Amino acid sequence: MLDLSYETPKPKVIAGAKHDWELVIGLEVHAQVASKAKLFSGASTKFGAEPNSNVAFVDAAMPGMLPVINEFCVEQAVRTGLGLKAQINLKSAFDRKNYFYPDLPQGYQISQLYHPIVGEGEVLVDMEPGIARLVRIERIHIEQDAGKSIHDMDPNMSFVDLNRTGVALMEIVSRPDIRGPEEAAAYVTKLRQILRYLGTCDGNMQNGNLRADVNVSICLPGQYEKYQETGDFSHLGTRCEIKNMNSMRFIQAAIDYEARRQIAIVEAGGTVDQETRLYDPDKGETRSMRSKEEAHDYRYFPDPDLLPLEIEQAWVDEIAASLPELPDAKKARFVTEFGLSEYDASVLTADTANASYFEEVANGTDGKLAANWVINELFGRLKKEDHSIEDSPVSPAQLAGIIKLIQKGDISGKIAKDLFEIVYTEGGDPARIVEDRGMKQVTDTGAIEAAVDEIIAANPAQVEKAKANPKLAGWFVGQVMKATGGKANPKAVNEIVAAKLGQ
Ligand SMILES: Nc1ncnc2c1ncn2[C@@H]1O[C@H](COP(=O)(O)OP(=O)(O)OP(=O)(O)O)[C@@H](O)[C@H]1O
Ligand SMILES: [Mg+2]
Ligand SMILES: [Mg+2]
Image (cartoon, rainbow, N blue to C red; front, side):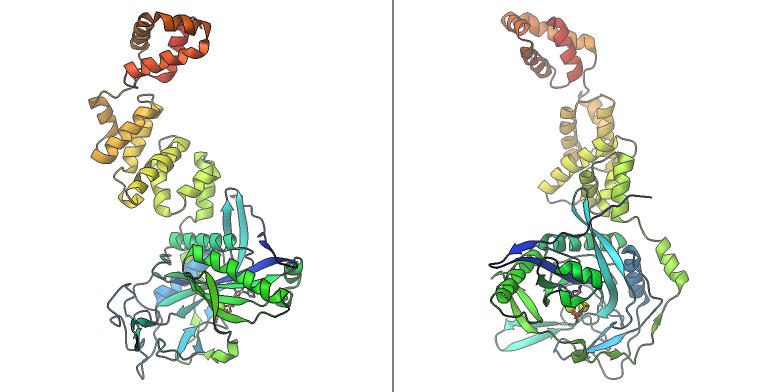
């Protein structure tokens, strides 16, 4: 069994004028299901299509149209739940969440309030190498996305685009276990990584495929522990919910701003109103959008058009058996199997493409050397041209070929970098290139000895100095390397120079 140890989250403390305050944060992450069709219709979910071109009659709420559940979306929610070690509810149900907005033609959103498909789970949030913190998941439910209102095309008109209406979302609700802006960003990062591994959401935040509602409150030291002991939320401060955040940087900035705003209110003797707020990245502040509706304002009730959703344990087991190796397990395995540092293992498991590339290189070469080459040389070079690993001009087999030449002592580390550049720009088999271009390291001691003798003979004054001061032997080593075009085996050169100088 892998040892995945963790600690409890650490509160960020902000000093107010009168007290120290702690932050309490809970996230509702909306992850768009990676499905080609919508949750209750066959309309496409393709991003960037002509406005209102991906709209089925049921999405537009035409009279008499009935929703039909997309089984693939349900499977992705189950998969996600299993990936978050969560309880899967074999029976769940859909509810209508009623509200009026022009981008919501039905006048309600189909969601799962009372009986979500996934119950309690957990996420290990990586803070830095060796430090992971546990954040509990409260639930995951499936719901429909709304459409999009467009207000900035014409000063006198608003438009609506229903392409997104009815797209399947998984709302992943955390417990208020997150205690600071960095933890919040690290939590979203980890969640996105897991979703990508599972293939259930592409995690593209720019396109809005992953967005977070960030709930923030403040409390005095000691209060959070009381909440933990009793489960009683009244020990915590009133939360404000910052809607629709789709950037890690803004999430952090918004939390910090919001906490300070609440501290100022409370210290001035006021009370925080529970409300929904929006973050304005230009001004760096949050502002009120509306006071928070209570659940009863939405008049939630079971959707009469949909039967309760019943799934079978055998199907869940089948999905569980098909789960890929997930980030924590892969990282731990890279540490033990390839002898990598935690840091290198995290970098290489950041996404599956990196991880499989590395594994291909490392099978048959030294793991640490392979990690070093993939992270420092390959990633560095790819970054220069904004290439991703998928379109790397150097294949894993080619990189492994270069590393094998180093391991055999055929080429030095320095020559290997030249070779890498040749393979990167021109392609070809590394061993062949070394052969054809005479890049092989000179390990033949006779040849090295000859080069050392020549340099000693040409520099008698230098020899005298070096005999008196052994540190100067390095100069001879440098000369030999230069004379051999960097191809002499450095270890052999050092030994021969030392011997010839009588050291
Ligand atoms: N005092 C608090 N401070 C910070 N976060 C809190 C606090 N109390 C609850 N939360 C968090 O707020 C979130 C509430 O989400 P949930 O989906 O349950 O309800 P909601 O926000 O009322 O509903 P909606 O989906 O309509 O926005 C959870 O992530 C929870 O952990
Ligand atoms: Mg919610
Ligand atoms: Mg909410």
